[in-house]
Length: 210
Image 1 (cartoon, rainbow, N blue to C red):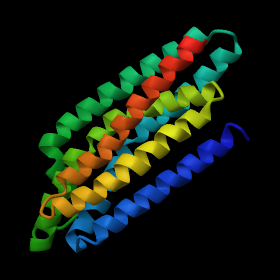
Image 2 (cartoon, rainbow, N blue to C red):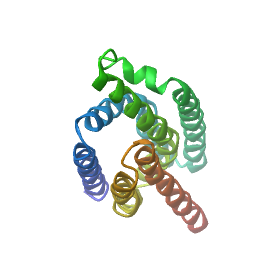
Image 3 (cartoon, helix red, strand yellow):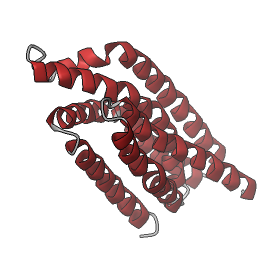
């Protein structure tokens, strides 16, 4: 219960946040909504790697902590962060050049609306894709916190990022930049940046108390 309830609440709030972001995008018009919808599916596929690392660190970390080898759990965390950051950076770099081409696979680029969706989707993807790298950091930390039985730390950093950065950032950039989706994508990634910073702080404090 102590470990499971914070995780359940965290996942629920994350889904609510994405629903709110979708509502904000829908209010910008049909093409914007289509672009955001396509990019969300692409990002969901790319997030398989950081999501897998969360589960991996949680399982390996718990096994090693239970075996009285906490340093091996930290080593698993370290390798997971290296893998996810390396993967995320490579994907983000590729998408800066190929983002529009990837979005074009999911729409009819021969029509005027299709071209607009490709343009907007490419913008959103080029900003949002950095979340793949940044999320890999806090996903790995979240797995470690769960392994230590401190899933409330994962809940705290996610809620702070959602409430103070991700949703407000997307709303403000949607209002301030009416002709581009790039800032909205960056706002989403900024939420993960804040989470990564908070996770690092939590981790350092845990190590000091150990």
